[in-house]
Image 1 (tube, rainbow, N blue to C red):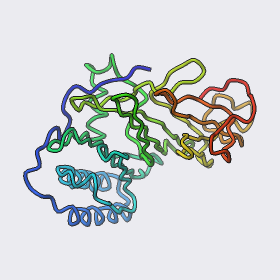
Image 2 (image 1 turned 60 degrees about the vertical axis):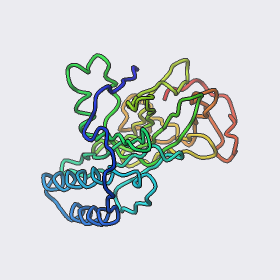
Image 3 (image 1 turned 120 degrees about the horizontal axis):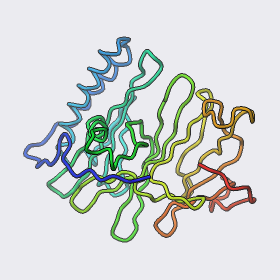
Image 4 (image 1 turned 135 degrees about the vertical axis):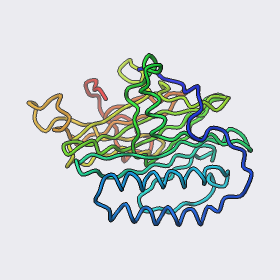
Length: 282
């Protein structure tokens, strides 16, 4: 799976902070918009309200203060990296057809005076353009992120994001994304930092039955996840009939890579393998 590097400016691009932004006041306005979306039934109006939220966040992200401010939203996830240099904001709205539409931003402090911001939907649309097709990573799409992990290797800093996508009425998806920024602030999606079964990945998706609950979280210095299997052998290959089988696999960061460890005991802080199993795919 190829990685791709965004070599053009998207949405907000570079900004020098010329004036202080009243983050608290803008946060309250966003909260009001959140509540309007919650009570709204019309998809078009919900989308329009979310676009208003995007505009308000665009103002907030002009300021470095956004990387240190403690946001408190009910439906919007704001994640900050351990080094306070990367921030991601994401939220979803349920549509009447059972699917979800996602909104959000990646923001990065390129320097003390410059912040670079990428709007999710603008970024995704640009990746679908004909001139980008040759290097497009078809796996990336806007989702709701809920956990961020910061890892350093040499002079590079990698951000691993865990996310959720309510795909449709039949299945959900949980996702692992790898992101880093180049020296000049360009976003690099799909860095192949995950390895297992002799392969390397920069993006992984776990699709499972809508009624199932799948664990995917960072704990005890490992990314731990349920191993998914069909509820009956006849449904092999049909993700809507997959769910946790009671075992867990994990990814442990060693030598600059996320390495797959199969059949782990999640009660063990060191996440050691408890027994050998046949090789499994993600």
